[in-house]
Length: 142
Image (tube, rainbow, N blue to C red):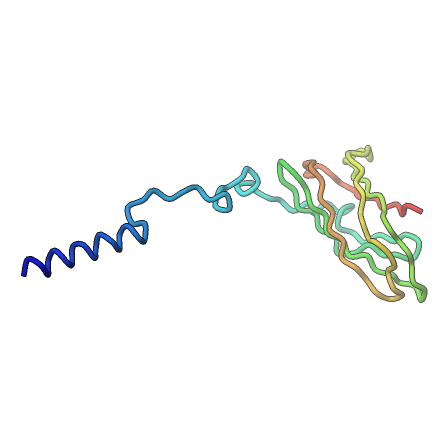
């Protein structure tokens, strides 16, 4: 009987050692939270930001601007409303405050041809808080 209890004890001890029971977990970088993980996001819904804009046959629609204290993300649908393909590599995006002053200029990357009557979704990030942006202006870089 003592041999059976001793054998069960040894097997339990081996299982605990092999599975790591009782060990302190090591810090996994994937599990560490960053400052951005705890950041509250706000959607900037000022009319000048979300309204549709047109420029040289391209229509900028469905704009959404997600902001925080650390950075902002603009997602815009770029639609070619013409019957010709339009080549657009990059375009400048200007954000303005309520007085019309530029807050920041960022570059939007399309990366080539926007086919006739087709569209692309463009995502642009900036390390600036754009909660106080009231308007956005697009400029195609030739």
